[in-house]
Structure formats: C-alpha cells, structure tokens
Amino acid sequence: MPADPRPRLRLWHLTESRFSSRSPEFATHTTAFTVRPPLEGDARDTVTCPWCATELRLRVASPERFRRSLGQWALGCAAALLTLVAGAVVVVATPLLVAGVVLLVGGFLAAVVTAAGWWWSTGVRPDGTPGPHHIRPDRSRR
Image (cartoon, rainbow, N blue to C red; front, side, top):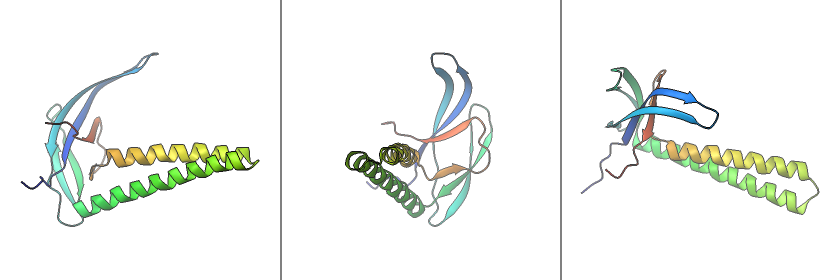
C-alpha cells in the first residue's frame, strides 16, 4: 500500500498561558488534520479551528520543495556541527581561548536552532498572523 502523500499535521490552539516562578503552564486544544500538497511550488489552503472557528490560511509546499527545505536545514546543522568541532580544536590546540569558546558556543546554538528547524518542519506555514495557533507535525502513532 503506498504511503499517503498528505502531511499529517496537528493544529494547536493555545487557550491560556501562565508563567509562574517554577515553570510556564500552557492549556492547549489540539486537532489532527491533513492538507493536500501541490505538485509544484506553493499552494494556499484554509483550515478551520474547531475550538474558536477561526479560518487559518495556510501556505503548503510541494513535496519537492519540502525535501529541499529539509536538506537545507540538515546542511545548516552539519555546518554548525563543523563549527562546534573547529571551536573544540581551537580551544585544545591553540592559545586562542576566547576565539575557541566563541566558536563552541556559536556552533552549539546554531546546531540547536537548525536541528529544531529540521525537526519541526512540516512544509505548511501560516499565511498571515496565526494568532494563538501553532502547526506542528503529528508524530502520534494513530
């Protein structure tokens, strides 16, 4: 049986957020949905939030464009990891401690950001201001 080409996504509606001294607390409602990607380029689609009845306009990327985007995130992460390794080499092998620490910290932060971008990438973006809504990949086993 061929895989379903539609990305499985989850729409998060943030209903309340409180920040206490111990930890932030969020109340959310989530709904699973799918969108049909176009064959080429980008397409526009609309999904309705079942909790607040807001229509969200979405920009959906084609599978080819989405794969290219994932490759760019992975390439950025690889470059960040190389910067991290270069920083470690500079710290160990040369007396330029400050430059090595800058490379280490910068490489680590860039690796975290690019790995998160790769992990959360869906090929679907809000077209406009999403308000209290977030679109995430649906990684559930259902």
